[in-house]
Image (tube, rainbow, N blue to C red):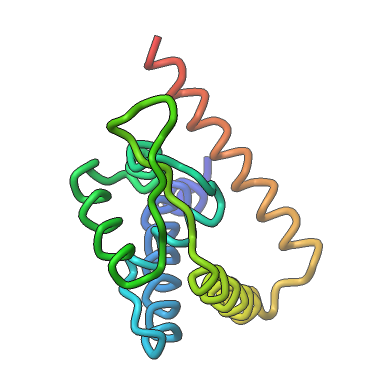
Length: 152
């Protein structure tokens, strides 16, 4: 293996981490005027993808402690972004739903995320984008297989 290839592969994790950090920072900058924190808009995004999720399910999705999600849910409910509904199956659990107001803001956030993706993918031809996504999806699948194997 050439030294350049070995060096590139060795730093792939750093590159992916830097890209993720820079994209989050730019998105934060673009949505700052909406008055939502990153934790709040991530919560709303995930709840939009999984309406009726319990706090435990969201905690797993967000990789947060259940108590942190519970506190965030309380703040978002007080602010009118979400509503909690009692679970029929478990009297201790709540199912969470976006309010219509939150649905509108999530649509706006989604549009802003689409614009950001267009900006950071600028200059990459369609074929290269497709190959990049295919390669990254393969890496993700490999990591999921490793995770699954280690859980056995």
